[in-house]
Amino acid sequence: MTKGQAQAKISEAVSKFEIEFMGRGPKQIRTLIIQDLIIVRLKGFLSQSEQKLADNSQGVELLKKIRVMLFESARNYLEVLIKEVVDVHIISTHSDVSTKTGEKIIVITVAENLEDRFDK
Image 1: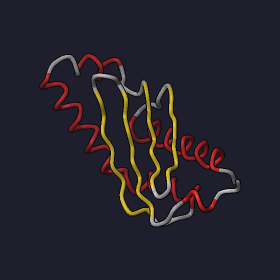
Image 2 (image 1 turned 120 degrees about the horizontal axis):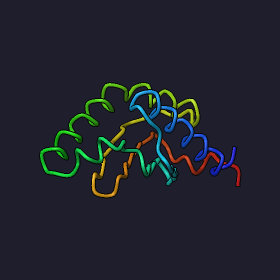
Image 3 (image 1 turned 90 degrees about the horizontal axis):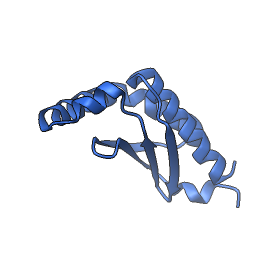
Image 4 (image 1 turned 45 degrees about the vertical axis):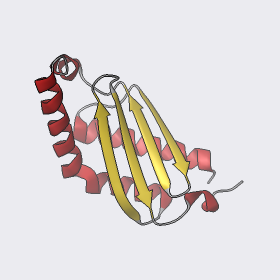
């Protein structure tokens, strides 16, 4: 498998996760593998009601809390999906949402340099 193929499969897995556990998938998704990091950037994943909720600071705080709780409750499933693609121990998974841009970033730290594994 090439690096590009692995990145595409991770994007598919994260999109599946977002649809199943967060209620909807992103409009765009991009995955980068950089040594022992997997970085996933999702755009356009907030629903219209979430965008409306983010119009004020209390709504932003509530939205972020809900998204964090949902993500944390399903993190193990996401890690299983990622491990099926890269077959490496996952050390940690981090996520943050920007209500300003409607983007989400997921950073996954793994136990080895993934770039060494791919066909050149």
